[in-house]
Image 1 (cartoon, rainbow over the protein chains, first blue to last red):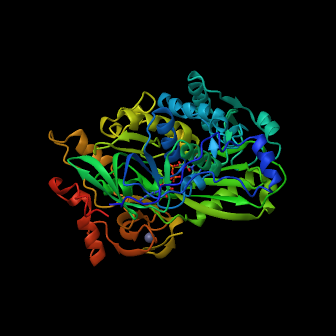
Image 2 (image 1 turned 120 degrees about the vertical axis):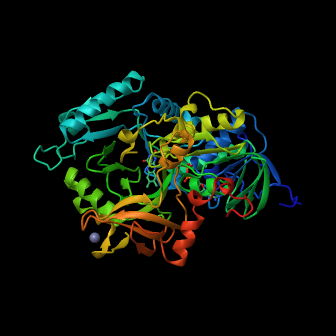
Length: 432
Length: 117
Ligand SMILES: Cc1cc2nc3c(=O)[nH]c(=O)nc-3n(C[C@H](O)[C@H](O)[C@H](O)COP(=O)(O)OP(=O)(O)OC[C@H]3O[C@@H](n4cnc5c(N)ncnc54)[C@H](O)[C@@H]3O)c2cc1C
Ligand SMILES: [Zn+2]
């Protein structure tokens, strides 16, 4: 149990005291940017909280933010075993879109995309959300037909989506090779123009700062090692910094969901696997949209710094090693060079891996659990960055009310017993 | 990249293999007593341990035969390779087999939180 500390926690600054604006930028320029106030406090745990969010990734921080902002919860902590945003939030390739096929997915991902559209303003933090469009290619007749059907389903849900022919694609992406002689020729594609990218770290930092301003404690280097469960109800979280009491515990730990569930005595339908990405040396602007191809297995975008950001599929086997197999990268680069011959002389600068939590139906879990007052949000697998705001928003609702709202309800754990799976392999196969 | 020792072909890169997931899952008897919960457990729930796991591999681009492996999912070290029809024989393999929640009787299935890691 954590002793009552003698020193008070540092006080969190209000938005008024630490508002980012043109004025504050100009003011701080006079002191050579040396006097910017700290964006959030790093705190030590209090003995007790109303809600403890485990996992300070984007989803966990968003959950805490919306709990404080929309549900008036006062006594909230977010704890992480490492540094905030150091999990998949800081490792992903930042593709954002809402063009999923089933109604349930359209609901949650579009809710999220709408929140993205106003997020920088809401958080007073530039998330660099850029609606540069997400273009998915088709390489076979069959894939094109299936894509057309998907586009119609997406449009029926009121989400923007259009099929493009190779000539239209070439207009948007002049560097692409649409030669019909290719091994996998570009036969067409579909685009969601409202899709795009955002700055991954900025999302974590923006939510952290905004949550801190509402009094949320952010506790880093505080690994959860177990739970105290009395009569089927959660009462405390055991951590390397001692035991912390909590009325409710919300776990958002992505690849480690299975490990944490095991601590609470139950299992999840989740496999944890490495997913890799890599970036090239920076070059001049050459690609101003996001290109994905499920059948040749690669996707690429160009960051504002000029680096090409590339990724592909997850490894086929379970692992927590945060590094994947080289053959995945080899295959992805071969596909990229075939589609974009101009990339062939680029050097790659870095590659890395994250551990993604994949579900049998490629849809997330936002749910109560067999333990009362313990909630899980996981299973986003290879594609949860885009859902960060929406996921945090509906999860906060679930934690506050102990009932899922209509957007979250289809993603509860009992779908694996009742059989109401939301099969999004078609939308999530490789693509993010 | 994993370097897997096929019992028939020797060490090969993981690109030649197909992953078969967790080993030793028994399909429940489809009698009238089979509940949705039990079947869901069989079909969907994963062991997904951070540490030692028992798993199946098939040498798809080689001899096309199946075999079982004891692997550490933190370091990717392969500690034992054994036939699909058998249970592991190494000490760590046996412990991993016995400790698995599927082989603990229902009354003991929920581990006491105190002893949980
Ligand atoms: C290479 C790669 C590319 C991707 N590309 C995309 C993409 O283009 N678009 C997209 O939408 N999605 C993408 N994703 C998926 C996306 O990154 C994730 O779905 C999303 O970021 C998950 O966010 P999160 O906050 O739930 O998890 P995380 O950011 O992983 O946060 C979980 C946190 O839990 C903490 N934690 C774990 N165990 C414990 C413990 N015992 N105690 C305390 N804390 C603990 C971790 O330290 C971590 O900080 C990609 C993922 C990877 C790896
Ligand atoms: Zn073989």
